[in-house]
Image 1 (cartoon, rainbow, N blue to C red):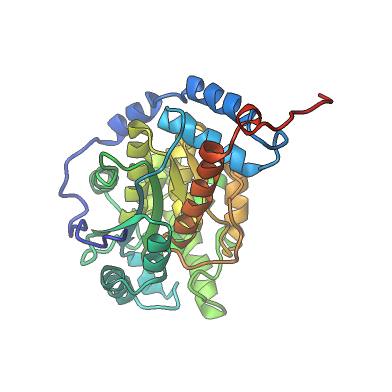
Image 2 (cartoon, one colour):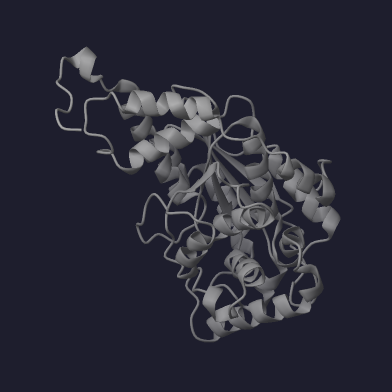
Length: 353
């Protein structure tokens, strides 16, 4: 099932919602994992017709889904891929191999069903929703000041929270935005230090002067907005973007609704890292779907304690890796829910503990 488009809105801030202080309070009051569901999952897993641990990370995934859905058996009948699209003022500094108008053009491609994520979403038996984030109003150039006002950033978070509708059981997040790996690199540089070069990669394929411009923009953005960077939400507004803030909002809403989240590549993981910097357990309901070819993504995953499910040298964005990972989650649940137990199959268990 692939129902594309239709839920986007021009105006990231049209929906009301929590301000920064309220967002912090929501995160502080996040629901805890469901331990009863975990125990029930482990009990069944231990009786299935296989040696303990033989399915490796598939067993981990099953337990993770049960833990955050708060039920056993865990199940994913309705998976959603949510792609947020936004434009970045810093793109005018030549940090991307493509012009800013490609963001809107690619949104239209998503709506028409012609992008990679459309094919991968359909293959995963999921639905696709594309959320336009004020494409006609890019963020400010963060080398000259904050990318977003606090109000606009909070409204973008609130807008992203609207993507988690009743009935969604697994959420895969993606993004589209020319210049957003520059924002992701600036977020990581602000959160974790090091040098700008540690966090900057080729993105859409920049090299030479384009790469140098990207490094310079990240350095300048972090230096210009230094007074905001002691607070993770300040980092988000200073060097983030509409779509990055919206992904953070979707992650927040998913936690409140009991929906596990699959993150895509570097930019989506950077959005999650902002929440992790507020509370290291704030993204426990998230898994990274794939390891991006963007060099710094591996280091970012290590910072937030994540091991991606797939590593296919992809660097497309648009939720492609997260959409692929939906099938891994479905495979894990199929094994857990469908396999016979030793007793029901008449198979002898271990003789040597």
